[in-house]
Image 1 (tube, rainbow, N blue to C red):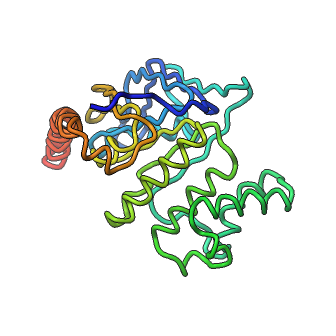
Image 2 (spheres, rainbow, N blue to C red):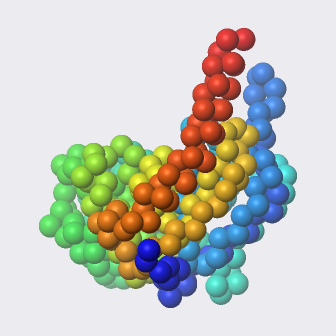
Image 3 (spheres, one colour):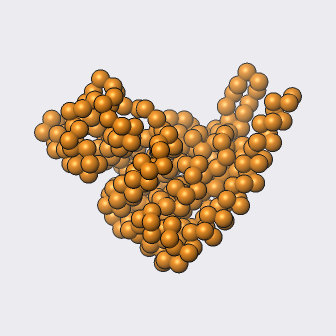
Length: 276
């Protein structure tokens, strides 16, 4: 087994502390509890991956971390290294680019909103285009490039504003397997050089093991933390090295054993609701 080295040494990211966090929603049929009693600490610079059955509240938790939603119970605090209000950027699955803007302008869009000067904006955009392997496509439009390229642009747009916290909700879920593998390694390379805090949601155990410092396994609705699993593979990390490590299979089985029970319970709950 490889010895873990933990997060990137350049810990410029935000730290997260969730204490008994819960979220309920009011519906025409009454109150629905999405997540319950979430206790989680994510240190600055960590790559934390959340897995769980569909409908367990993973996205709700991410939205609260992004400030797009608020807990109805408990406390959620996010702190930047400087003590200032931490910044965040969110990358969702699927199409999130502006079709009327070029690839370069999509990446620089957040900088423009923030009032960044044209020269600085162009410098940052050019650097990210090179990092993402998209320099030749700066003037192209989203419909002219592949889905994998569009997702790279979405990641670049998020990184352009230099967030303390990068939140990613199944960003590679709609991609073919080969493109997903390429972008996993691309994301690892960018993260390892930036030291930002990343919270990443996925349904793929393989993806979780490849990317994470720790894997948070959530229960069926209402989502609680079933377990937190340390990933023992050294940084810098590659997909091929992780998958060829003898510890990979055992870690996969450990994660799936936890998830299988929750996926089964979630299915039984849905079937019971449909039967009523």
